[in-house]
Image 1 (tube, rainbow, N blue to C red):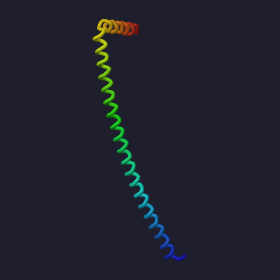
Image 2 (spheres, helix red, strand yellow; image 1 turned 90 degrees about the vertical axis):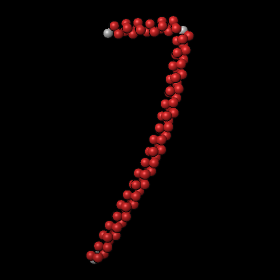
Image 3 (tube, rainbow, N blue to C red; image 1 turned 30 degrees about the vertical axis):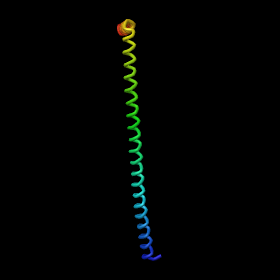
Image 4 (tube, rainbow, N blue to C red; image 1 turned 45 degrees about the vertical axis):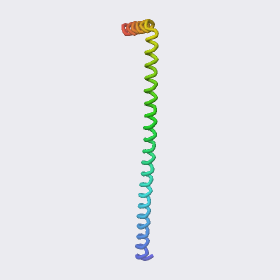
Length: 97
């Protein structure tokens, strides 16, 4: 082996290394873009699911409040008795401490 063949081999190796690094960089960028797109899609689905859940919780809360109001209006004295009993029970428990 002479000096010129060693230089040619080194040059070829450097060129191959540069090509490999450029290809690796390109693949990394493509992978990053793919992950970004998948992340945005997942965030969109999550946002949509949360909005749906929020609407369902609001509907259930309104329905429960209406049912409670109806029960209290239909049975006012029983409601007062339950509220009084719970108040006494909580008061006794707090006083025992």
